[in-house]
Image 1 (cartoon, rainbow, N blue to C red):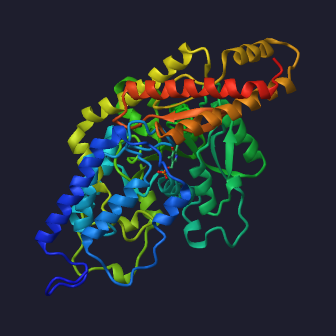
Image 2 (cartoon, protein in one colour; image 1 turned 90 degrees about the horizontal axis):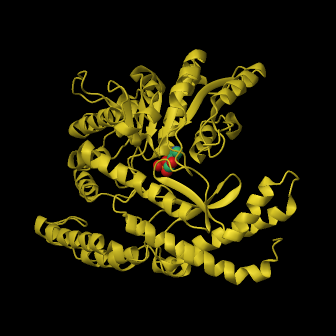
Image 3 (tube, protein in one colour; image 1 turned 180 degrees about the vertical axis):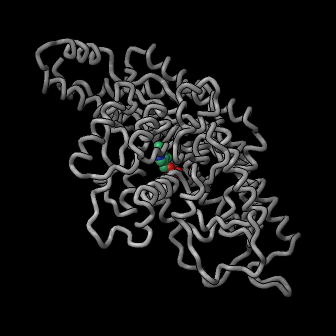
Length: 518
Ligand SMILES: *Cc1c(COP(=O)(O)O)cnc(C)c1O
């Protein structure tokens, strides 16, 4: 575009900005208004999406309203509509409108929350948000913590802090080099250890083998006796356990590990106790679940993820560390170019000395704004909504002859399986049979695995809903994560019926060819 008189490229006078901004706001408002009617998943060939953005680097600029045109035309058209009430994939919050506005304002202020001096109010907002999050889940509020890009980086920060603490911080200087070291190990329940724990072990150069899987109970929670046995065995082998990761909300069935018991094991053995609550730690805001979260307050560190069940827009994770000094010792860094000329007071602390990032965005504003708008009460209502939707789905599954429940409902993530009634009967018979039915039933399971995957593929392609499959007890299952505050029981019903119809149709088409042993 031609620059306005006297302005440098990119700058806009306030009126021009206002006009552009109103257009952007209209776009967002229309978007929110249309969510119910949009196909949730992109209705295009992937190559069309590639082609839409396959432009060369622009040599000359264009009018900013043309940039908005392009966003409206292509980015919106080829988006997956995560904010849709029928988006049940992964663990994704729907995004709160107040968070979108707060993000825009944070971007305009452009404070860099690496240090107090470039970001006094933003530092204090983040400090307050960390305290509020701790308070909300019943964690000690005299804690230290910070916002991160997500749960993965929160887990990386926690596992590094655990490792430094358990090696008396000497590894900060020499890393894993130099003298011979033991094999370090961390522990998590086996049925669905979140990949981010492997990521953390990998990034910290402990290696993915450092993650030791502990057998789980039938309800998918960690078997604490098995944990103790594994710790004993590894110690006898000369390994050095340093951390136990409990999950508060596991990724496929939203199970909550027995936090209090694990805390006691860690106490007895002087191990770091980390709670990965990226999925579900905020469920501790509900007084009726107090029993299930008991012990979270004893954790040395907790990961939570405001961009999931708190529905704050991406990106925003958080890590709480009980002992401020341990976190400070882990990340302390001194560089002369970071020292300003203003005298430091105890209030003025720099977040870059408590985490891995130097330049840091003002993520806290959207969390602060969301917590202020909804309050604990508003959030409790939304959290209960997610739990109620999952329980409703569980009822539909148990009432239907062609579905099988694979879990009791926990929080908002619920997995289940399409199993036509006659195949279910055959499998039940085989299970009851003392002689090992073996291979024929394996063929039934393979058929069901294919069928469940195809059901999800069809429903996703239709645009009605987005969900995924996962593996529970080695079987392909349908997986739903209902953490969007916009979702209603009607949305759940519509999707459930589509799954049932698709399953019946595919089964009728496929069965004659499948030659199953029943
Ligand atoms: C989502 C999730 C993570 C990773 O969080 P991101 O925000 O995706 O990086 C870690 N642990 C659990 C249990 C999760 O559900």
